[in-house]
Image (cartoon, rainbow, N blue to C red):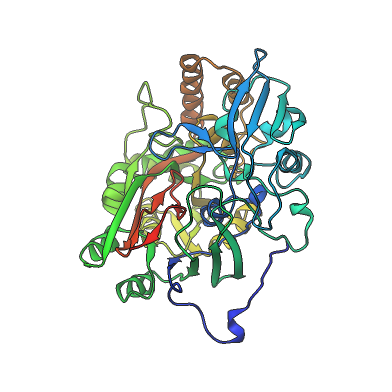
Length: 494
């Protein structure tokens, strides 16, 4: 896995503190894992990529509707399987090469043929039958079956357009058509983007963006207080209250297309048992827990979908909170030596740490020893992939269609199926829903799918976050993407 590291700041002993001229410093708890769009699986990578690259389409930040981007328009033929995209002309990549349909063909072909890259959207990979360049500004994508969420799926960072030949470069060079170009990256410390003078839309006002890693929450607060940084994502109500009192800070908010859940390792003997999963769920007073830890920073959820994606027609009938009944199940089914479990979560987030601690204290009331470990996000992902855990706390964000949450997380082929859940009946139901273009019929099918997941309980949906960003008042026109990431395209220094 090669990443371009053009400058190692440690050679001079200096880490950038403030943006130079009309630049900004965004301090965050974790670094990006990759800048290759096809491999992105985390918000820290996506929030940088969306400022470098563009896709054929993107999301309107207010309505969540798909809108044109590199494609100015599209059409779907009567067979519901053939999509023709008409591309914008006169657009150049950061390296000066002109964007054309060949770059779209290359990007999609890479997703199809590269085994690692295509795991998240394997359903799109399996559906694409052919890609034909019709003209430099027109491309045809043929599917082997109707796929209703196709356009919405294309708003995911996996489908951001890379210039032809880009994925073969070693090390990989992040080159896109977006408002900012890659400049420098020292892994684990700082990543810098610079203004793209060739950007095809309104002129970019910021000279550079410095993404600086600071795992310690108190240090992040101190830096923005002292104006050594400009931006941070608020992680707790205490942080919000502290920052709101600072006269040079304003707080920007929106609801994320995101869910957070407690996942079980269904490959362990304990949590392969549905009775123990149900008992663990009954031991959690979700409403009280989420509101106590997050207050207005998150909403409790009962299904693994963001509230803005689909309304539940019927309550799922969550098991009533009863910690004594849960305790009885654990003591009946497990010996004392079997009542120790390992919970992992990503460090650097005060609220997540508090949530994990409260789950541990709650488990102790049942006679369960829940050993909690916070680790850097890459280490959490590594342990999950090695199945070195019993439970985990994790979030997931995607484009606003139920299929883009349920299929990747709850089918055997799904890249984000960290629990190891399998249910062939659910898979068939999701197959039907993907091929259905009638919105009412699709919603009915997904309501049934949610009932399956509620009964089988591979995870406990906990909350959907609202994105709160503390921003120095010198910065104007900051935008928040529905994925909960900061877009700097229209931002400027006052």
